[in-house]
Amino acid sequence: MTEQDWLNGTDPTPMLEFLKGNASERKLRLFAVACCRSIWHLLTDERSRIAVDVFERLVDGLATTEEVQEADKLACAVETAHVEAAKLGDDADEQAWDIVLDGCAAANAVQTWRASEYLTGFYTVYGFAQTAVAHAACPLRYETSRREHTPERTKAIAVEANAQSRLIRDIVGNPFRPVTVDASWLTSTVVAPAEGIYQDRAFDRLPILADALQDAGCDNPDVLNHCRGDGPHCRGCWVIDLLTGRK
Image: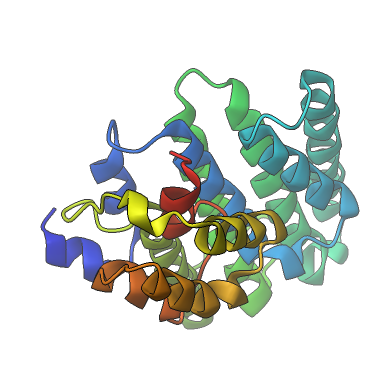
């Protein structure tokens, strides 16, 4: 992969392949979370949302093993219930099948915490998220929805794949031009707001953080442009991690 491939990529698969061995487990897990949050409006069962929230807290060491195991059970229960509902009849056409995919995405996100080959789990998560938006764009019957590729579904998958690629770039940055933090940037007026953005997921504050960075002497265009760009941004954002000492 070249730098231009990375900067212009619209498919997360080759980007994740390129990152094997070059991105922290934390970064990859936050990508899994971001994929689930990108279909938050489709996670209509609260148990799936709880599973994603717990998994995200686990990434920062804030969830117990017991909490994760319980969240795992909840998400898997969603998956099982909606698979059965999708097989029964009319619900399969319009409602049940899209929800089961969302449940699978959340369930797999939680399950990756214990997988020895955890990267496989991330592929599963973003693939389920793509299929979920495809079904929302063009619902199909349960028994055919894995095989059908209508123009609406193909377009929806492409749009979601592009969004996921942008999330990877938000989390990893440009691996061809890594940025090293200058200690002079790490003033209280920079670090505290950066931590607040992380904790609150308040990425709309990033342009204000860019101003604070400039006041602290930061003139790195990659850092400043990222803060002032359109995003998307998520937990794991490379600039926030750089300023708060997260890997």
